[in-house]
Length: 343
Image 1 (cartoon, rainbow, N blue to C red):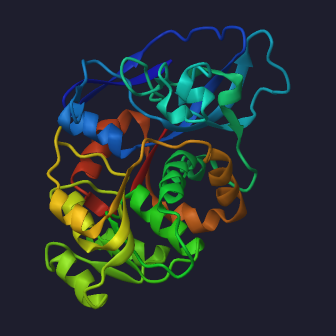
Image 2 (cartoon, rainbow, N blue to C red):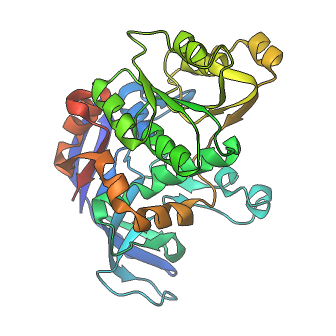
């Protein structure tokens, strides 16, 4: 089978490796489409996510769709060729966090693409049968890859507890930020600001429902949002970028007793925060780790209105061009938002 392996910082190579037979309770899928995530980009560009440093080589990719090939003993109800979305997280279901329903904090989790567990930049993958989610007929394989980042965005919305008409600011108009904008407007948010340096992504944020967009290279986003809100600030802030000063700026644009949700992953191991500002405002601060029971809702949203989400997939490239795709995303070139790699 073909495998795209990251073997050094910013260096991919294509390998031909044997496929392993599925074991009891497992299904072998042929991966067809894989979205590139921001965490994949961290491993490519930084060789780490915060203080977690990877050891090469690694196989990335955790936003996959594919087709059923065959299965091991004990698996029923499937046919070869069935199309599915492929859940990358394998939980133990027995630790205290799983028993409490916090599966995304499982103490024994295997997350395919988080070293040492290889991800989906490989042609064939064996998964527990329950990790396959049937792909709705109205959704194509490329658009279907959005189920995983959309579930993350929906998980962040759980923390925000948005009330009808509340205002919001989203830092970053990458795929997660754009999906957050969509989720906010669908949930009944009032005015939504989006802060994004890329002009193409700012325009996409407008198309997805943002009422105002801010170029942080041209305008101080804190000053602009505070001016627009009469110095009050917004009810809830989502930092989907975690770049430069966005975490601190998220606190600055939040109103007193507001909420700040950090969905993005900083490159640096430590992030500066003004705790005095947080204290004076009594800001509630949330961190997001992937998703937790939001996949079903994400799939239903894609099924109900795939045309709303399909524009997020701006580029499709063969798996052999993984290096070029990551370079494009790193440079925010050619208006790239979500790039999907195809086998």
